[in-house]
Length: 207
Image (cartoon, rainbow, N blue to C red):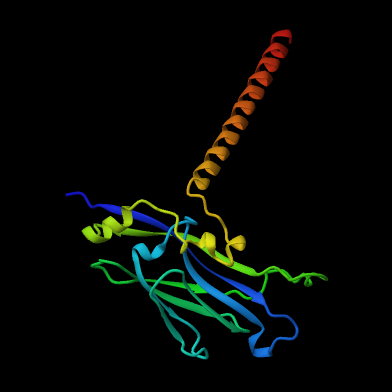
């Protein structure tokens, strides 16, 4: 019997806001680490039972168990560190999936903050997929259920305007565009080569 494989796309990341010059030295930023669906309307808790976040030991408590979407933790601090996650799925016979994310508080460049207004938050996120091999019947039903717009989807997040909208078709579209450009360049190069060959042949005939 062939192995049934199902996929679910997700985004793991963090967003950090500077609290300004008046903030405490030990609490210079407010940040949120999150696990969200790639689809802005999808409720991850349909198939994710809970997410266990392991933070820096100086934060109390250093571990947080989030049992419903949105799966995120918000804290204040000044330092960057690696955050570990364990993702538990409904009706799963497998061990929880373990992931990690490096919290990012500061932008890559050294540009000065804007003279007026609030500086943009620092967002660090990556797109990935959960892969389920031969899931249980209960989990399969959850994974294949129709996605209905949910208030727990990240579209309704206070951070939504800063998140990357990962379109599942975008990578394929991008590859198709690249292919078309390369094909056009090859055709043009082939055309130029034929012209040069014809010119060389005419010169040889005259010589």
